[in-house]
Image 1 (tube, rainbow, N blue to C red):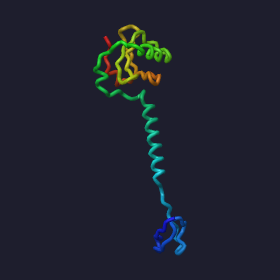
Image 2 (tube, rainbow, N blue to C red):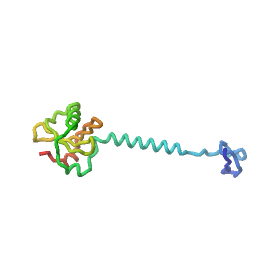
Image 3 (cartoon, one colour):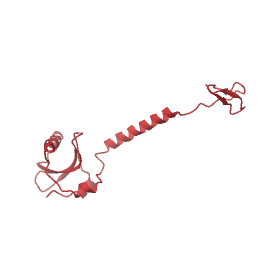
Image 4 (cartoon, one colour):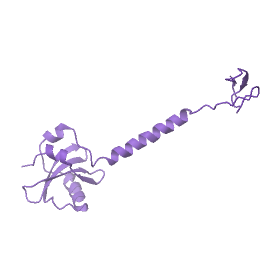
Amino acid sequence: MALINCSECKQEISSKADKCPYCGNKMKKGGFGCGTFILIGIICFVGFYIVGSNSESSSVITDEQTYSQSWRSPRGTEFTEIGRIIVSNGIKVCGEYYIKEIEDKEYVIACSSDGSSWDYFVVYTRLDKIYRANEEMESKLHPPR
């Protein structure tokens, strides 16, 4: 317990007192402590993380290197991982497909059922997710052939 001065009569009183025993002035409690600010920070961080992770389907890949790199055939486990995601999502336009690797386990894919018209998707094999590329991304992508 610490002693503080009453804001009205300036007498020393306990910091735990609800009101001053000398003048009856109601004491204000300390407000927010460090724990409150840490909790608010954690809640904000989690909220931003959730919003960020749910916005993958609507975001545009801004890394210009992704758009400028050449298409390539999937290799190794990429073929089976991406193929499984395509099939499990019922995507039927991928008779053949080519990829551009954005990051490890993240790809832009170009799919075609006839070799001349192409549909573009973003695949996250680590998350087992696939999203159709939006119009802005499609405008930056060029067919593999």
